[in-house]
Amino acid sequence: MEKKVRVRFAPSPTGGLHLGGVRTVLFNYLFAKKHGGDFIVRIEDTDQTRFVEGAEAYIFNTLAWCGLTPDESPLHGGPYAPYRQSERKASYKQYADQLVNAGFAYYAFDTPEDLEQMRAQYKTDENPSPQYNHLLRTKMRNSITLSEAEVAALLAAGTPHVVRIKMPLDETVSFTDMIRGEVSFNTSQVDDKVLLKADGMPTYHLAVVVDDYLMKITHAFRGEEWLPSAPVHILLWKYLGWSAEMPEWAHLPLILKPDGNGKLSKRDGDRLGFPVFAMDWTDPKTGEKTTGFKERGFLPQAFVNLLALLGWNDGTDNEVFTIDELIAAFSMERVHKGGAKFNYEKALWYNQEWIKRATAADLADQVAETLAAAGTTASNREVLLRVIDLVKERCTLMADFVTQGSFFFMSPSEFDTASIQPKWTDQKNMFFIELSKAFESSIVWEAHDLEKTFKEIAAAHDLKPGELMLPLRIMLVGGKFGPGVFDIAAIIGKEETVNRIQKVLSILEHN
Ligand code: GLU
Image 1 (cartoon, rainbow, N blue to C red):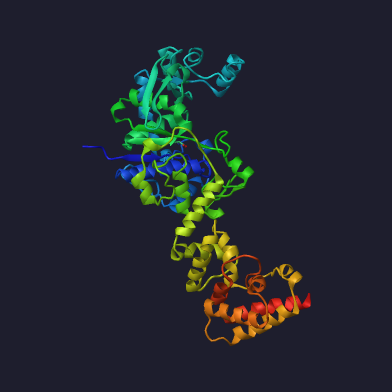
Image 2: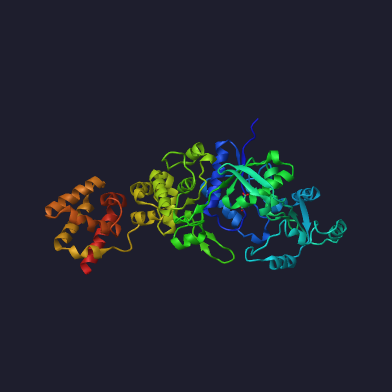
């Protein structure tokens, strides 16, 4: 029987989630759902020095916003709990011991000062930061250089020590990456990574392998930046006797700066004025705030869609996909090897597409929230739905609903009378006085009838409707934007329409 697909997203809670991280989540999720498998989120928090308060909650809030719900996680529970590595601390030591006993790893008693001295002593121009590796391990204080008796005495005395992997000399470690194909490393290039720290905590390298094994992970997808660690992990799978259970690997391409020059960083976003994190993130230590796609006004469907297309396509020109369509179309083999350039204009295009496609009802809650945050209460849902239908084609970001929608719910606080003034005449003034009277006494209040009244009165005053549209728009909206003026008048109602016309007439009169 085929093994059930089990994939994991294994973030370290060190800060906000970069869009590359969310894309890793997404590819995991799509693969799992496509194959009827499980999507697990495991929190890799064994490096306590990098732990950041609030980062884990942020990760789960982001996943919830994106609709990428884990099947198992510290929050959702599951048969392999706990899903936080710090809570699994006790389970790792036995594997480190097993590796030491089999000669694949060793104890190292070097103090931080010893390590510093080693780096200083062996530093050269070609090798500015010498590593603890097959060459230098012979010069250090470890169970390879010390006698058995010395090691036993040090251990008995409780001397602080770490466990390091003993990288073999000049061997080739190869594996087949689902995206890159055959990948090989020479083991001499890799240092003797620490597996278990002095405080008994595993490092990422040991913990990731042990947990992928214990949690029966079948496919491990992660960012390309982890590729250099792959030989260590593959050897650990082998040394622990689990090669047959090893997951298939896929190292996802980087998301690049818009100009293609290196990995997209938070700083690029700050510099170029677009978000790089999924949601707003405030660094608890520095108080520094980073804007997220959510707060910038992206719909989660658009965010997910644009991430999927960063480094993947279905082989056609199709760009807009729902999550179900993505699940159906996704395959790891179609993920590109090369990095994907991030293009913010394109991201905006996706959002616009999704706003267009969404129904007013889909958008209503979010629009109401956005308006409320800007101080506009849209209490009448029916009106809100009409407004959304009328303006959504003009909105790229959710915040655009504030500009395009607020004046439906409250009178503009400013009117761009400067744009009316230069061409204002008594004749026009008379026209608007009569128009407001006619509106006041009209019985039906429909866009079509309002337009008819407007045109009739214009003709009677020998004025072209074209000259009167802009003033009317500014009277109702405050500025030169928005959907059809008669549609606006129909929605805001008779009283408000008449009030706004009269208000602007009096401003013009007093100027
Ligand atoms: N904990 C690693 C990270 O923070 C996970 C890498 C992996 O998936 O193996 O990205």
